[in-house]
Image 1 (tube, rainbow, N blue to C red):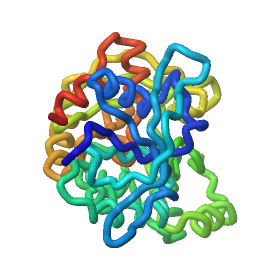
Image 2 (cartoon, rainbow, N blue to C red):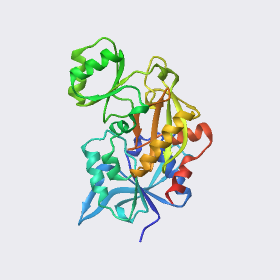
Image 3 (cartoon, one colour):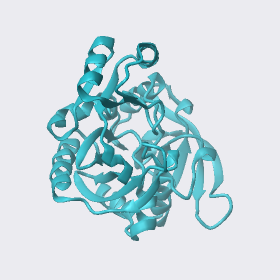
Amino acid sequence: MKSKTIAIQGDSLNKLNPKTDTTIFLAVEAQKKNYKIFYYEPKNLYIKANNVYAKGFFVKFNYLKNKNYKIIKKKNFKLDKAKIILIRQDPPFDLQYIVTTHILEKIKNTKIVNDPKAIRDISEKLYSTEFNNYMPKTLFSSNLEEIKKFIKTNKKIVIKPINGFGGNNIYLIKNKINKIKLKEIIHKNGHVMCQKFLPGIKNGDKRVFVINGKVRGAISRVPKKGSFLSNLSKGATAKLTKIKSGEMKISIKVAKNLKKNKIFFAGIDFISGKLNGDINITSPTGLKTYYDLSGINLAKIFWDELK
């Protein structure tokens, strides 16, 4: 029999910022529905006698005290007893991340969000090739000559690691080709995503929230002065924004495709009305920020949709 427990697979609790963290925001809302929260880190996931367990603890989250959580009880928990499992650890999408998806796939009759096989099969950046017509000029390659041609054609480009996250290791290349630098980037990352730079980023990008195949809202993230990175972790400022009709049409198309592929919760990013190639499915963020700006609680909608 299922216990009224939500299991969350996430990063160390000490790393979570309650002011902005979506995982805490979702957990607090689940507690309002009388769910207990069991929290564990990916490294503490294991299989014993063909059953999947995690070493972690039952925890109570809050926004009222200096410390935003309290450990209730440590436990080795059999995960198929959970009503729902949330995969919430941040990338990098490395071998350990992939291994955890294989382990979680062994759990039957427990809802896992997002679906572990879907997370493994859908690359957050490569998946965007399904919607190439809505993107700026984009190249995926590890070939130096192809990348040099792309720079010559597009003049100013952004290079991103395919499995990167949080605005890390992103490079802005302007006209001049530095072969040594490009070789370093390729050596470090292998295949990379190269994209024509969109100057409209100075006015911010747009993060659109998708829950259960439906578009639910958006925030804009404006880079700090002198930066082209719109990640809040890189100093960008969040603002409330509206989704334009063209963006909405694209978002609905992407959202339907995501639902078909068993992705329940995602974030779609736009710059100047174009998809920028980041379709966040591993650990989408922004719900707490959206609530603070709009007063709309998408965590409530998240749990209502999971019913």
